[in-house]
Amino acid sequence: MLILVVFGVLCGILASILGAGSSMMMTPLLLYVFPLITGKYFSIQTITSATLALTFFSTATASIRYHNAKLIPYRYALILAISGSVGSFISGSYISKNINHLFILTLFGSIAVLSLVFNLIPIKEKNEQVPKTIFFVMGIVIIFFLGITTGIIGIGGMVLFMPYMVYVLRFSIRKTIGTTTFAGAMIALFGIIGKSFIGMMNWEVSLVVAIGGMIGGYVGPTFSKFFSDRILRYGMNVILLTIIITVLMDIYKNI
Image (cartoon, helix red, strand yellow):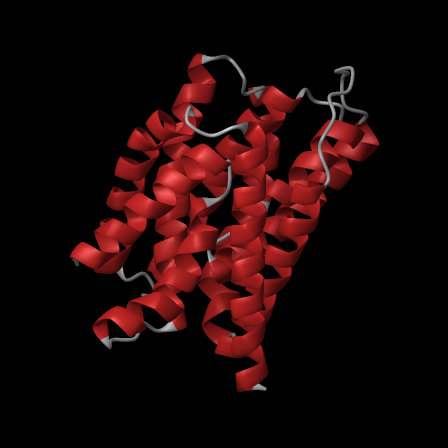
């Protein structure tokens, strides 16, 4: 279990200093690195349950900080979070049990590719405005499908929703981060509830990984002051590219 704690701490640190979803890095660690070190393999369902737990604990912890800073506009954030949570619960309790290893790998790889693309495009601040109703309704639909993704692979790609909030809904960047973090916590929670209903949560692994992630998230900001924003951005791109290459190689072997 010590290696799981170490993985959790590492992902928590990376998430806190690189601004990335810690669960995305956890998937290849459990899928590829853990077997190399221990000779033991986890099922893909155990891995997705661990990433869900890590996502929930890391985003819930961060949400407290954003709440205290008054950066979560609950009037909109709650509606978006509920929509995504419904999608996550449905996929966690009904869809995920009927999906095979290859599909999960393909979906995960697609999210990683899109995350890399969006990370390469800098988000520029726009003048904050009240969201137009039609665009907000579209946002509710989009985050519902991101919630479905969360219930299946443990990550929802909230980074994909951030440009929509900034450029279309016209939220400030700081409120966008607060809203997506809060929504991500609720979505992950309902994904966990859904998987629990059908007995697909491996609590022993999930809680150990999540506790490690919380420790890493707490100590991570201490290291961030030693790196420039440019270095951090390059670091995130390298991590995403490494994940993409590894997953693509695995997909190729499984075809």
